[in-house]
Image (cartoon, rainbow, N blue to C red; front, side):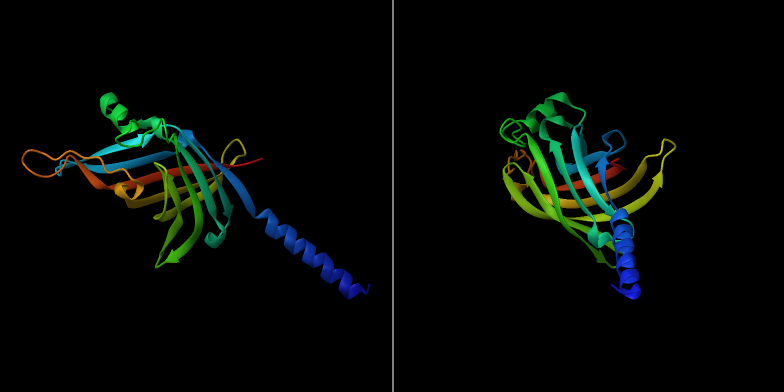
Length: 196
């Protein structure tokens, strides 16, 4: 092998190694993250809620959103709207049916640039149905914490129609209208730590 070929091969290996080093798997830090939602109540207000149990991973490449990916699992029975009776109803057969469908899952299919922002595209599985969803995505930054952990943060939001997932229960009010809106706003604040 000539000197030129040897140097070319060595440089190629270095570039590949450098590229591989920039990709990392991050685990969602649930203690510094939140998975929330908001839905209309009697057309006069919005009730907010969160899920207390969730986990997931993010594949992150610095400066390359097209190579990012994410997957997450949420325990449906961990829904919390600050009202035990309502939470029990949401966990029951009329809504999430947590006994039959204990998990909500999300698997991303890509991130695209849209104007000055980013859109996370993926499949959401809930109540036995899988549908595509799109979330406005904001990258909040990356840093190394005082204990040597590499961290990244994201915010995401979107809207889905719960009827698309077979969750259609409602109550018609005596004076018109319904008790619960069909559109659900999603609000996520995610912090994740690089696997070591």
